[in-house]
Image (cartoon, rainbow, N blue to C red; front, side, top):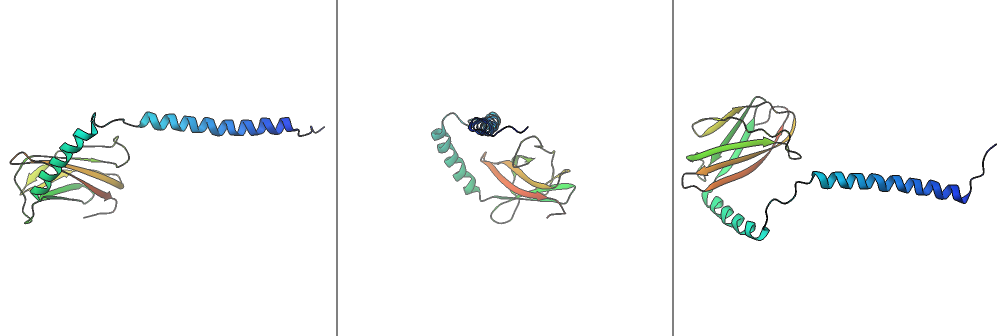
Length: 154
């Protein structure tokens, strides 16, 4: 014996379908908000003023960072407007994925002739290299380099 499909059954089916959709959306929204890191600074106006001053000081240096990776070693160079390696008070670089911080690593670099080298094993894919250095006069230098590790890339 087959039961007849009534309006009440259709209503229950429709409410159940929309209930599942709404429940999934609520779970996804909670997960998204829970994974958001939150505020970076307390006062964005004050931070923007500092950012503008630091950016101008960095632009006045005229430096550019470049990186290469051969599958085993990461090489980072900072060059000035004439292509020379400037004298740095401090240097570091953090390598990480653009989508999360779980794989971030700050390798130990050795320096020779203004070229910074570190042994590093990167999985294939996109990587960001956040270079930080300090000029002799104390001016901070920061640059993000987008890099792809896969087949040998130079």
